[in-house]
Length: 189
Image (tube, rainbow, N blue to C red; front, side, top):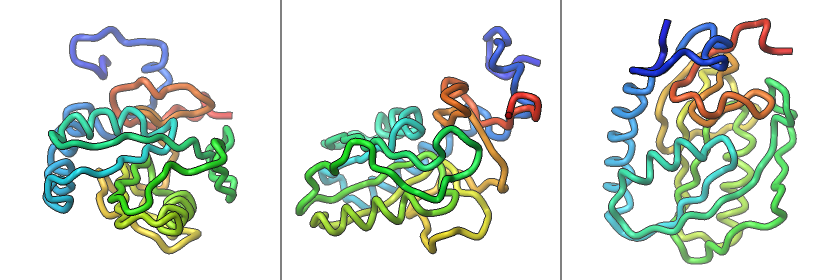
């Protein structure tokens, strides 16, 4: 079955057991989230800090819906280290945070799972003097978190399963899928 409108079924599509959230549904939800963010930020300039690499696709599509002046910074953070579960350690691979002193910040991540990444990065941004820090995630897993944290803006609530696509990967693959899906068991391992 073709999972993308007018596109050929690819080898990576064949690795997907099922589509959890399709491309059209994602697009409609991004319109709503963008409006909510614009309303809270009052159309004023802010800094979007993107957690790489997973939030890259989500961020690009989200920020194109916001006709306001903004800065985009990236932060290379690792917590999965190639597996399907968080390692429990959040590493900022770039070694430093962008300058946020006195600025309004939107922290964007792909998925809220254990809560460690949003908690640690948000805490560090506040310590660096950010005027305001809000968080936005594409997906939030419905599960108990290792750290008590929530996102200010959430695209979709999902079950506690490993997902790929729309920026999310497994061992560096599947980020380019235009939907969020669940891999076949034989593709993980």
